[in-house]
Length: 118
Length: 173
Image (cartoon, rainbow over all chains, first blue to last red; front, side, top):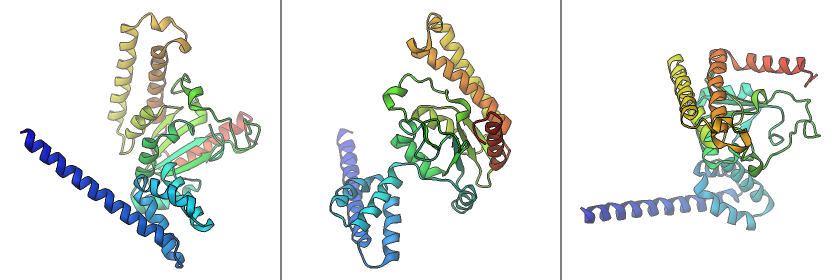
């Protein structure tokens, strides 16, 4: 019983580390793409890094230190998009996105602008 | 909300993954922090003893269908766990029955505190976490009633009503 559990655990660990390695390889490719000449590819890489989310953050934070100003700006936007709520202020546009992505809308209403609130 | 609830990793991930997020400033001329559009920012430490549910009409969260129909409304400030619990109620369609059941559960939790800790009920808020919990549960009961009142309405209309109410209060011109 214990042996079976240990084997299952080992299999899980191998699968998890394989997943991590895949994430790292994907992030490395995207970072390379982010510094390339093709503007569309840079945009796509930025969006893709946001999709990878928190697992990409340690590598991104290291890359920020060495990046040129354009790439640095993009990487900082990725960090913000992953670590902060992605607020928008245009309700009509939000409704279009919500319909397209089949998501509900959360409206937070307060006294104060985004970034200037309690 | 910024320094505690909207800074919490779980809240951020949940909001970004499940919702399209809209920020609405319902009193754009107000300058409570000395600068238009800004309010003072409280640290996580300062907020430790701030009662959950407080903040009332200044802190409003509406959960809506993609077409803008309101499903649920949460009024006031809540810590991350409570905020996630409350918005989970409305991530899907909230029925009148679900809302009534939640209201009952909140009232039962309030009665339990009252019954089991009568001495705590006599203490001031700042000296008793249970007293604050009791008050917060009461505010959440109120949230269910307020939510029932706006559910089914369209969000632009409700935001306009809030704006007008602030105009009448003299907060905005």
